[in-house]
Length: 303
Image: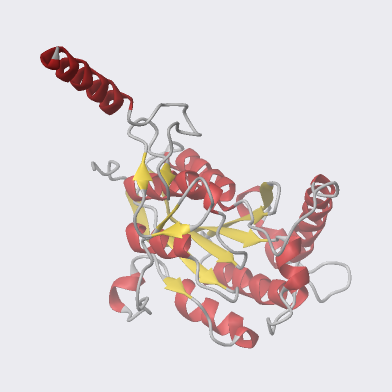
């Protein structure tokens, strides 16, 4: 696979695109988690504030990953430099935090209204493929803005389980990030590991981490994910013990080791089907035609 053309990038200036998992079903049912949504946001806001103070040229973009939709909730390039350091009226919360929280509240309200009429069993998966696509689109726009730009990277703060129906879309975004040389870092806060994010971090050269103690989430974030790409060459960052490369079937949404693949659209099935449910192609049509022709020849020889 050919890589994207190299561009002039500054060494210590970063463009950090954070994908924030806001799935309401995850936060409402994650009783085993030692951190609530409000505590989680406090850790994330402190981390983002640290990124902006590490270098005045650093940029931060936050994308909310909901259950039904995803959207931009903060972009530091659209805020003035004074609003980043200036406190809000209460004197305790920085201005960028109040702006982010207001946009997040509006997004949560809209996303929740979309799923009122739906009945959800369990936690449900968030729209990871959509937020990854939005992050890559934003980064491509930065690439086209000029020859000099900060080094982009994506950080997924994810807790919801993987959605097998998003497998193809997620893999497409992973390969697009690899082609553009954009690393995808992953910080999983859920109870289980994410096979999607394990593959994303491994293929793109990012860092995958599942913190053991969520009470110290800020320490994990600032220690592992605050470093720019140039400084990572001199640090001993954590490496995953193993990567789950298994795919998910399109018929039952189960993770499988072996299966059947459609030669037209590359859909994956755990069992043999006569027709592809994705593109409508018929499986085994050539074999059945060959078998019928051989039967006719055999009957002709017998007569």
